[in-house]
Image 1 (tube, rainbow, N blue to C red):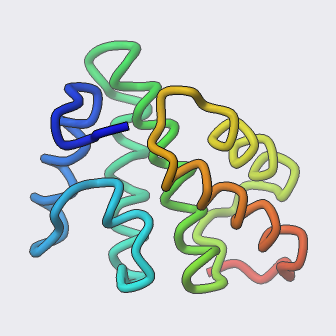
Image 2 (image 1 turned 90 degrees about the horizontal axis):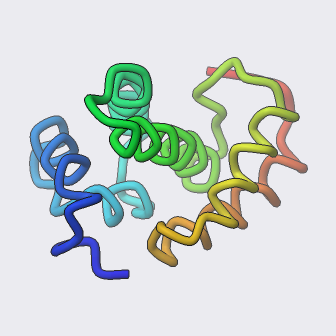
Length: 126
């Protein structure tokens, strides 16, 4: 899936580039090992807001997917859970990401990695 031209990701790309200087787009930022834990926390707040307050159902669905992807990225790249959600709920969210047909392959692959990392992760949360 090409996210540069995809209207579905235009809003997410704009939000990420505005919040994280030097970012190119949402997907590359979320799937980069160079994204700091602090930036993942910023993105989590941003996408949580989109998930709840998005103008359209599509915006809210995108916010929910990217909210989960942000938590997955922090887990995969920093071995940290940046949420208080249960492992059971995170497993469902990461599995939904993995199965989503409207997301780029990079996000579905990261969700697979997050599922594996979640199984091995301790309950410490930060």
